[in-house]
Length: 190
View (cartoon, rainbow, N blue to C red):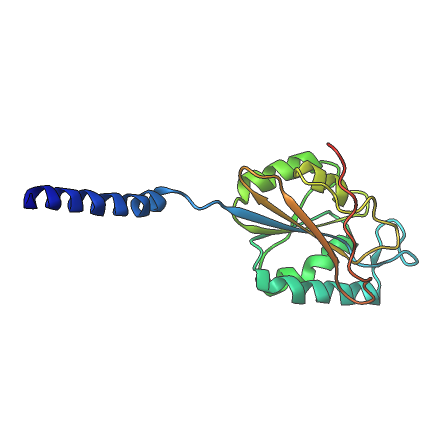
């Protein structure tokens, strides 16, 4: 009888350890976080073809640095314009990451690269009013706003991607003269 009790207790101890051991073998799901924003306010008087930032745009770039430096992005992507490069320059200097130029017309290629090469990391992408929402869609998310108006510079989109689930997209305002928090748009059927 004592032998039977010892076998039973040993079996229970093994079963109690199995879930813990099984849990150790599982890989924790990686969360990729991508921050997307439009360049700061542009000065169209000086050079309309490739404008620099206005004083308000420069202040917005500083606000971006202050907001995202603590997130420690491992990569920063920008289009090849003065206004986008100037928008991420303070953040890039703060986190010591060299911004990489991408082609804003190739949102699908950028989205595939972000998903493949930056799994589990934090990335910043600065673009334009007509390129950010297509990029969110290319990442598999639903844009939370219908459009970005020509005079809207304060949207900060956050796309969180985890394996096996749809991306989560959030939006908020940031920087000087920002609007009140954005109400989510009605869900669209895909």
